Length: 283
Image (tube, rainbow, N blue to C red; front, side, top):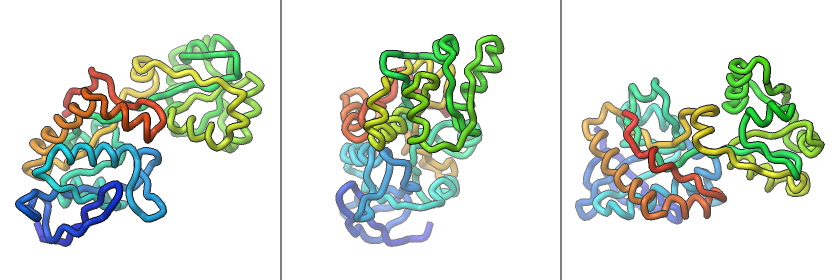
């Protein structure tokens, strides 16, 4: 692999570390690990006003490499992060990647560091924890084609033809939907980070609503079976499997000692750490 100049990118600074390549030795014999991200979505990954990477995923990576001092992480933003990992020009990619069988053919998945959380916003004084409860109460939802929650509700409706949830497909923005939620006719079902961002953007409107979390086991069974996020290591590199296992063991340490929970509460707003049962290799 050709040598190239690297910039070490951490949460707070960018430092020149010299010339290195994938898995090569940098200063003081430290091995440089090349990684890329697409740089979104917030609050998991984003660039601040100085162009520096921030967010939960970045904080997790920094903690991982603090515990692996024999390595030095070089992390860049690239639109081709996924294909670069597949081709082996970098060691891994971080971008809140979830599992699917197609990806498993080309990449090794690390242990998870995030589990998707979902909730239901409804008129204050009411709570709904499942699709069944929403259907039984006769509540409607707004939907958009291709959205994972909309897809899940569509699947629920197919399996429950006599007790369906009415989906109204719309391009209305969030502010226009709030009066419908406040009236009690509709509920809002979504990913918690997204729901939190809406509540922050429209505090007056969402003060009229109550948020109820959906249980993790219900999410896995009814909304998405790929609820966890992972680092992806291209299988073409001969050391990919051993590197992902080495990094994965540290991710598991961060889970066990409460670091993932602490970071997610600070940077996401609530606990998005995986379940104990999530710590298995998917491939």
